[in-house]
Image 1 (cartoon, rainbow, N blue to C red):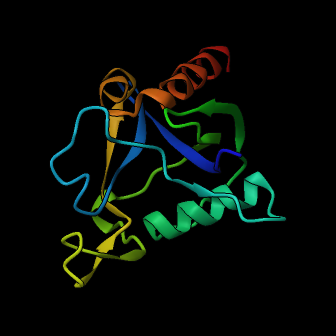
Image 2 (image 1 turned 180 degrees about the vertical axis):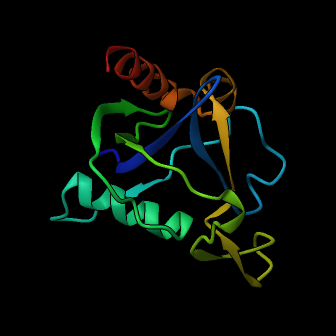
Image 3 (image 1 turned 180 degrees about the horizontal axis):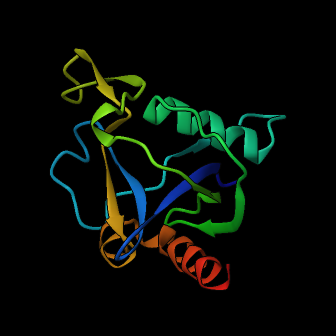
Length: 154
């Protein structure tokens, strides 16, 4: 069974349109990747945990800020590799310079026997919807389209 994650696509309104908050994964595998590497803040849904609770928990863990306010369901997408991501939109604003991610440990370099600690998210940034289409993982791109449709109808 493919892993199931839940996440939040935060958005804000600016004079020239809407922007969305995306995160760049930390760790050595993602260090030199940019276009098509960004994501919504998300993570695995724990057994017995509902999607909204998981999405809010992961947002807090990856950004260091609580996800406050009503969530708008954006549905589910399937990423390459089969991971299912359930997403919600949230109107809000936060200072990306103050983002503080949780950390994970892994052996690095591989087969070296050395363990190193890395941030789960090494940076966050606000993007226009057009720019976000270039930056986000292919499998999550439909979430941007769903948010845009919601914003047009609101």
